[in-house]
Length: 538
Image 1: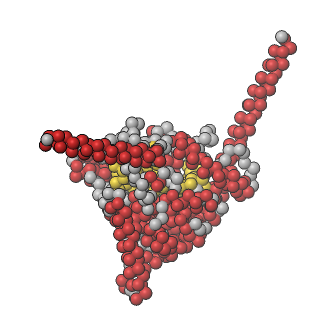
Image 2: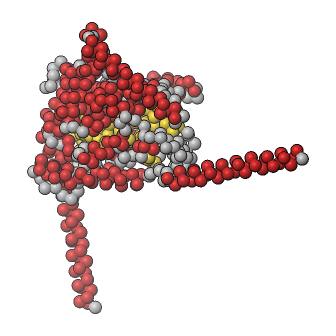
Image 3: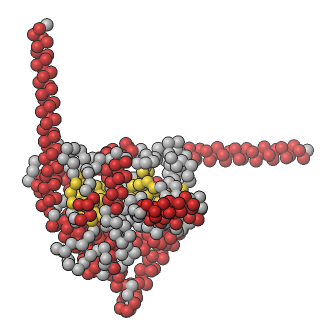
């Protein structure tokens, strides 16, 4: 009797479990249908990017025709800007460059802009402001000056105390919201969250409390309404102890050409398996991404030793460093990063992914890979004609031109087209042009290092000025204007060179196009002549 009751109980429990499993499976299947095919490939994403770029291509081409007084050919001229990292030094130097491009009426003609670390903050703040660049820059420098004044205790008064209190309150409320959000998705709040909110106070203060609610995908509308360049914000995804690959962040997609996998911004950070997810939480805030882009502090002992070894040229020292690296390569504490951003691997479980067995991806400042995000722009599908490279790298510990050489060498090993770079010329001049006269499909590189220009100021040197340190987050109005004014001066001084360069590039394509048309028509005429002879004979 007891045995029968036990069997009956087990049968009921089994039936209930089976029913729940079926319900769960139905729920999962519905979810899977809803979120099917979330992972996009190279070709899918790049076709999408092409459509976005083409929406403004006619306007850009007409603007160039009018500006240069030149009738262009069918080929649309693609011009890009590439800005390196370097904290707020990079932020303000990038700002001066963009302001100058607006003044020479070329900012609307830029198709792409790739940024890293501090330069990402400039472009994000500008695109969210939805303002003309000169107006935005004034507000940016004013905001930085305002934050700088608030931190000075000597000038403290009731009004300033009230502003500081309000700023702390807003940040605390936003941090609490982030904590609750992370708790819902079973993630812990980290230093990256707090750092991102502080960056929002620094860069997006003018937008009020809504600055903490902004998302990367919000920029889509701004890009559609204005003739802004297509932004590519970069970071580095860590594959092992010190090997990294580029990770691209745009308002439309986030991913890597190395992984051949991309997700939409609102899916980034969710738990994936074989390209599908059951998570339904909202998109990560822009503050979190800004912190990732500028997380140069997320280093490890092995990273630091490897970086020193790559900079030093002495063979004896390099041997010592290599031996040290080998000794600590298997030590967990030596490879552990300080406060990195950990994101769920969106390629987890995908057969073609090289990191298919990793639950999470460590994402850090792109400077760990290279401080100049040139490689993403050189991808063949982007077909860029001219790339302006602004190098904001501090030369305190790194030789001049080191990051440029690193970027170009890496690109060449991956068979990406580049002209021959004269590094001696690049180091000694503040505006140098490198092009391949024999290959119109090879992009022209214009290199602009952040260095002293005596025609701008006899005393100011961005490489030695104390306020230009990468670790400095406080700039007065005078300091901000001084730094942004330098890159603005360099572009304005070389205005005619830039116009001439673009004009020659267009003419080069026009000549090539004319020759191709001639060859095609010549072949057609020969073919028709052959047909006539054939008919006359037979």
